[in-house]
Structures are given as structure tokens and as C-alpha cells.
Image: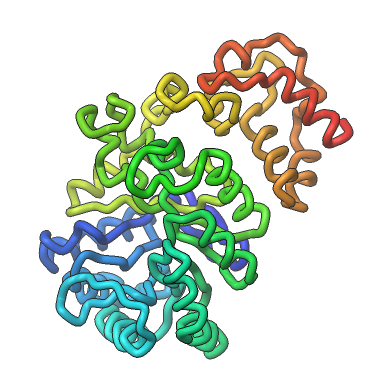
Length: 364
């Protein structure tokens, strides 16, 4: 397993976590075994926005004795009083639901307390005025919550709460379909969504990724908006390459699904290569570096994707990006202008010209 550090904390978070939207039908025994398998393989981040109440007691049993080694992402607004998932903005209902989740999980603290599924301005206003955010912040002061987060599909909503400065983490839907304007949750243009990812990294806010497979649509040529199926590994790598992303949370159903997902860790680079998107994405995605490194290997030894990422982050206001860039072994000034990267870039980025821009910006 690989781990990425939470910028506003010391937590080392596994790049593969678990989503719970599809676990319920397997039953408590299979869920407990699946969670145990995840723990054995180094998975330590678990999103608890489940489709029903069934996973919670199973998780409580599975993590008994190792609670300090796992991170729960618990949602303030997900309600399970009927046994099935429900969504609420009512503060008293939120309090009752969170208390129930803690008891079912056999824990007295929350690693990541998330304001749940805020996609509309009216919902954001109710959260702001209805006391939910005040309640979450109070729980953090009391030590019940370690970090505050937000789950949303709407860049504009996320940006409004980022402006307030208290978020340590966001849960956002990142996949090629949504990023390139395909699907119900494809909110915001290519530039707007990429700008959000860069802002999160620049401001030290981590991202946990939901809907990496667009609800499974990307995995089937008949349902994919690109009319071509992508693999789970391509989608996972795509999300992990985005600025700010710490972990991807595939929704697994059982141990078999989890074993297949864990195969990502030992998969060959060509199994994770999503450069085919260059021929499928819309024209307004052309010319935008997505850091896929399909241009590698560079004859001069440059890490072209990383150089681009530090440049974009510096432009987005990340004060550490310049320092990271300066300490690269090979920088934009080392570009020999051979055009190898330009000829291989699936997104038609003029990397030779861009290296000149980057060199000028950083004063190489």
C-alpha cells in the first residue's frame, strides 16, 4: 500500500480506501471479512456514507482492537433511522444520526466529520444558518472530531466553504466523464474543476474521491459517454494524478471486489495508462496538461508532468510549489526542445513552449 500525508495533520492515508454504497446486501459477516481483508492489506480510510445501516455494526466488530489505525469519514446529514440511507439538513436529526453511527461503530471520536452532500446554494444556506457547521466546529473543539470535511459535486459550493478556511478535506466526484462534461454530476467546466483540485492542493486541503467509475458507467462501452470502456485501474490512476487527491474510495460489494481493486497496487504501468482519453475528451480539454506522463520518457530526463503540476499549483497560489520545483533534479531550463513530448501528448499540449513559459516564470 502507498500512503499520502494529510496536509493539515499527521495522518498517513492509504491511496485506496473503501466506499460503502454497495456493501449492505453482502450481509454483516461478509462485510466484516471484507473490512478485515482491507486492513490486512494496508487500507486505513473508510467512507461511511452507506446505502443502508447494515455495514456499521460490522465495521464496529472488524476494527475492534485496532481503532487507532483506521480513519472513519462520517457524514453529518446521512440518516439511517429507517435502516436505509436518508438525507437530512435538520440539526436534531443530524445529531441523532451521528450518535447512532458512533455507537454502531463502537467509537467515541470521528476522524473526519463531513458536512454531507451539499450541492445547491439553498442547501448551503441552510447548513450555514441552521447550526450544523457550528455544531461540527464545537465537536472539533471538544476533540470529538479530528478534522472537518465537506462532500459535494459542485465546485462553486466547495469554493464558498473553502473561503471560510475550516475545511481539512473534501470528498469530490472525480472521473473522466464528469471532468469532461458527461453525466448527472458533471458540474462545472474542465478549467473550473481543475482549478478546484489545484486550489485544494495549494491550500493544503485533501481530497477523497467518490464516483471514480461514474457509478460503473465508465466500465462498460454501452454506458460510457466515450463509447469505449475504461478499466477500474485507469480510473483510479486518473483520480490519483489530480492535485490534492489523497485517496480513492471505490464502492466494493465483497471480498472478491476488494481483491480485484487491490490488484491496482501491483498492476503494470500500461494497465493504469489512461492516455486513450486524449482521443475521447472534448475539444475544450485539448491543451490542458493532466499530468498523465504519457510523454515519458523524456530524452533529457525531465519529469514533464510534475514540472507542469508545480507550475499550475504556483499559479494557483501554492507557496510551497516553487520550492518543490527548485529542488527538482531536472527543471524546465533543461528542456532541449526535441519535441518528443509534444508528439506523444494525447491532450495536444505544446510542452516545449510550456517549458519556456515555466522557465521564465520560475526564473531558471
